[in-house]
Image (cartoon, rainbow, N blue to C red; front, side):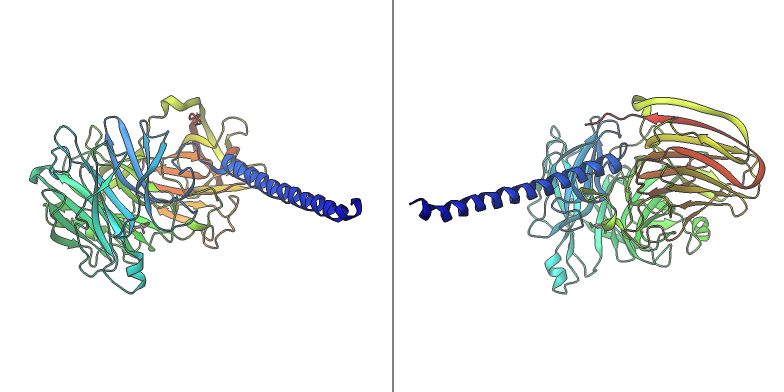
Length: 536
Ligand code: FRU
């Protein structure tokens, strides 16, 4: 009896051991994954910028403001950390710093996946989809029929609408979608809708191949084609995407001009994705470029909202203007050249900080300027200044331990610039450095992230320096930067030139050193703020 049961006994013990060792292995693997996730969260999850809790994000969509809340929807693949069937994710904020993510707003349907688009607050219920008491929010987006695309159709992108009767938290798709059929243009997408008060009508701008097209409507449902824009104007190295259009008042003259944003990929001034802008007039039907502006657009260095490599598909908020009538803008802080490879695996990509755009008069005509929109007072932990000193060849502006550079704003003033190159360097004890600066001889700004940390995930990520022109002729320079764990947003000359770029150091940067290529009499001073946003 004993003899007979022994093999069975050994078999069970063996099986149990095998089972437990298997569990142990799975557990160890799980622990390792958790550890990795935690390390990634600590190392790379931005403190000041919106990122999705999990998985893939690209363009900002449907930005609108209502009753004290900013709504940000975004291109989202909720099941993977790379691009796939697009949904609209949703987040809200009351201060443009802290964001709360909500459930998916729009999911794919029989007409396709949900590509980029916009949202408007239909105060007068022109759509009839709500009531005067219960204002409908209308989202206008592109349905992308991937199957039709695969089968060789050219009409697989159409424009559809959805409405929300609870201020943007839940949505119903309109029963008679699409509202704009495809006229036979392969890339036909990213509708942005604005209300034109002077003509009491809605205007829709979308990207169609390498141009933009304008439509109008009284009810957001029936749309009439009005005109097209873009042939022979601006950059045409890639597909035009995510347009926007809004009136602005030139600060100095009070003159009203219309600004037309058009993202392009590839074709950006430093490679890959970027957003160009055009200044002109819009009569409700046609956008006419200012002749003066046209002559200023030189083929490659057209006018770019941001010359850095990581600000794409940016658009402005509906139902929001600052007291001067200026719009509020957010962009996607990445670049199609390497976005799917960036070394975060739990989530992929970040939005830029929200920015106010303004139009200013310069000797070269009107110029778009950007400034930071959030009021950082509530998260200011420490403030300080660096009194004016002679730069000579090199000075440490922020020594290690002074402030946490992974959530900070630093403003640096240089006076009596010499015809040489000034380099600002952020560095950590691993010897990783992010360098950026200004060459006063070439009147060019630059960012060099080749030694900034992890760069090998893409051959083009750090292959060359990014460059940007200086528009001012001035022997003083003010450069403001906002630093997060993985990004720098540089605003030069009060935001006349902007550069936004991402980076992935193995450890946080600890100090800021400024140097000049030759000994100068340049004077340097600085002011800094350390931020402590609330952690979830
Ligand atoms: C821009 C873009 C849009 C499109 C979306 C798809 O980054 O290509 O044109 O609607 O992304 O996710």
